[in-house]
Image (cartoon, rainbow, N blue to C red):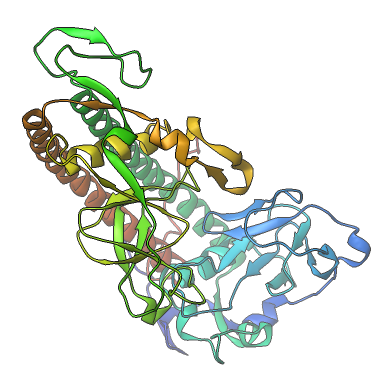
Length: 429
């Protein structure tokens, strides 16, 4: 793609030069910062700024934190820009959005409204490119690294002629749609690979890959099993443990979607406890499961000594002669992945409290192959996982390249490093 014929240098750190015929104005020449409070709760259309842009929220069951009184919120109109420029050291949060309809959002957000006839999507894409490049994150001040509305209005921005704004938007809408379609296709490939892996694990731990005679297990999630396998209850081979540490100073172990990990409490990683003295011990070879959130929770097998939340369920094998711990790690993790545990839960699912009572867990049916077969199954699964995970890694690398190209393309076009004035753009389908 070609560049413009002539450029002018700027004094903006992240904007080395712009096309000579473009203007460079402080944002306050193009935008105002009106503030209209939602007095009397006259507007109840709650909007939220997310990583996917501005979305409609549910006032009765909102995503994230919500106030008791929405009269403190401010009103936004369609085609306003919205910025969340607090806690700028956090590079993973949303920063800018384009409002699609009238609604209300937090008073902590910054509202920009165009003073003149502009293509608002061009300026959204410019500020969006600043977010993609983490520029906002280096501009804040104060303890919480915040950028105020006056600070933002004082920042210089490029202003192309209106017809070029329109062409830039048409070009980027077309190009990014094509890139997003490719990324979507790659993500679907990953979903299919994960589904294939899950099916293989399911078939392996329930003996579907065995060349032998089968009988009905009488358990829905297991189905038929090899005739020489047993079907037992968890309580026949495992016991639940509860040993409170009584003091701090131990490694803190948390449960993630990847299993168990040591939590870095020195950097306030994740949700912090007021005290870890009431946490419970977990030893190498013991399991911990988040039985309080059966939809998004998970479990793992510890290989270190430490403490974990007293709300988790820690349990251990009592029958090490007939049970391989890694085989049952797959069995229990499948309970989450196939939502089998979810079907045994109780509580308030809409509030993230869908728990599996201890009695249901103790009476959970598990397959018990001969231990030699358990070890062989674990070995087969690990080799298959390695193969699938390698394929997923390669697909993720392709996605990363496309995302990097998308970021660079948006940045180069909205800052005038690429001239798209003569680009022929097909009709969007």
